[in-house]
Image (cartoon, rainbow, N blue to C red; front, side, top):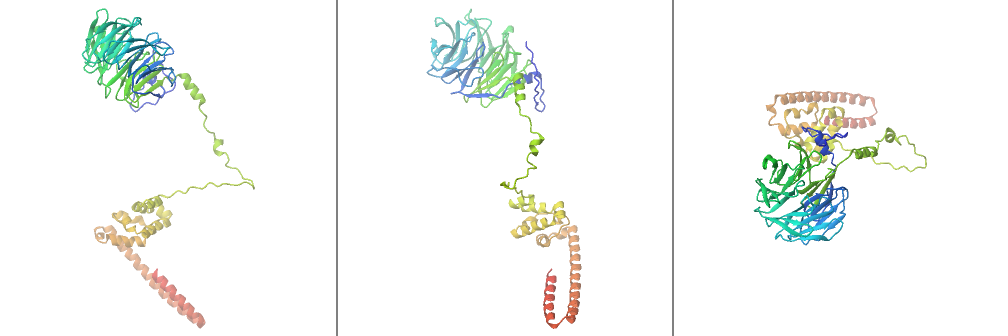
Length: 505
């Protein structure tokens, strides 16, 4: 068994995620390449031989894509109705597919016309495959029968009718050409042996079976249906080993990787989950829509997922050479000279200078005034740094609020600590505060004490104004006695104007 080799590029884990070599192995897949098909993609199958082209069954056609091509290199469109279950033969030269009309067609990869048509089913054939000898084809249909066909003669060899509902899952054995496994909507998984012509083993899945899968050793069998993924031990007569319930919706497909034989499952919940050897989820891929089909290349180089919206998502593995090439192509960061380039450039006399307009940024209080947040604007203007360093800004904001008629709204609904204005007082603010809160001033001793202090300051200011008026009267008398009569009238007029102005202040 091959071992997982960690790469030099480390990935940042999610919070609480335990990063192992196995997790890093699956994280080496690149971002998906998405290809739009004509309808829901019901089947994807990789060619067993290099270069590992893959067949995509969607709507009424089957497209063959190259390992890295985003356009089909070949198309098979000879279907009158929906095509189902396109599968390669072991040598990759032939392809078989069923259809809604009940016909099974056999194609040569190098041609376009069907080599054989197998007729016998009365309803849609959803599952087809080659047996390991390459000369027989097995099919599962909605007519509740499994049929085996001879490729050279196009003759039906056997018909098995032991299921009681639609057969939607099929997996042939690669070690024994007479064995194959089927899954049905009757909740059963059956192992058929062509030598006995009947089923030799039956397992009860408990839900309509969407997919069956044999491990390379063919000791373990996987069945998916409903939200459950179940693993069965065929050596113990079909004993159930594990029952997994990690998806939130119906699990529609499953496949096994070639490195480590890790199980991958896809579901209608848009997730592809990768399980480790102990059947714990080691990694998760997210998709854009519900998943109907999935396949992984024999060398694990590509993972293809088909969705209900007709989108084919293909992820390719990232190799160490690709990482080194990407690192070498990465542009170097700018040096210091790039940032200082042109700083000391001096224009010539005949140069025409184009000045770049400087964007003006609004202050916080301007933005708040612009958005009519008057209370927040007043709070910003009364902050400690603003009122001490730029008191003119605080006064300007208060005047602007008063001009707008919103100063009363800005001061409303405040407590006593905010009403103190952090030591900053404005005449208009004090007047508005008195009008708003005169009914509740007596409830706060702090505010009452400040008002008394304000009255004392105003009283002292009034006394100073009276003393100033007395001094002005004395000065007027002195100036009158010392100047001619014509100048006395002018001085008296000016003195009265100064006195009125002082009193108003």
